[in-house]
Length: 320
Image (cartoon, rainbow, N blue to C red; front, top):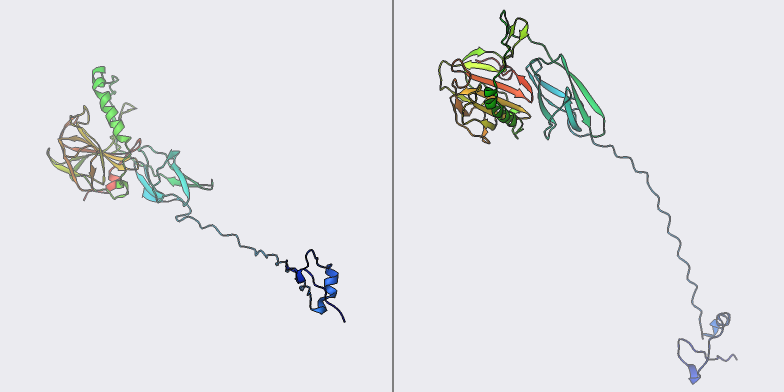
């Protein structure tokens, strides 16, 4: 008969005997059948997790920015005319003939051609990725009203006394034209500020024995008398409204239509708006007169884009 010998298991002293110890593991295994100690079953090591499989992801195709792929424009593409357009999508800057353009939030712009502009002008846009997009604009020539006079032009210039008065006036005019007001008037189809007989056309010029004089920088509208009211041809901001008459222009009013385009109204008898005031197309802004250097009551309306003088007739169309 086999006698079971007690062992210390889990800190319990069997039969009051202290200091006993467990037999070696191999002996424990041999005695498992006696019911004294059962060796726990071996625990299998967990299988390693399978390595993740990385799927091939397609390269996303960038979405092109909204807008045209090249310049889109229209207008009066002739000397003294103008152009409205939209730059290519993604354009960060644009220019025409080397002059930088102002692009609004939609990439739209305004530009114009001076009286003696050349036959072509290059529109250039720089895109975000550095590429350049270029379009050529054909500028049609015009036949100007040229009067040849067999009289020598007076060689003497303005006196110093006159220039002392004139210089501050020119400074105020220059400052007004540099305001660059926030206006969308340049987007509109212009209307006539007043209707009457056209007594002087834009671009007309006298040549004195081969020496050209200054050409007429605007359009003159005669109404038969002083005091006739006139209105704003488009929305804008008043940037100059003289309180005393200037030496040449008389009472002078300048309205900024935005994008560097402005209207000047000369020889007024009265101005009813003030500097900084926003005006709307068709709003009454003053009365016709003959102040300054004028031979009779009329409204001289001049349009200018930066340094280029423009023909108002190309903004309004014929007077009905």
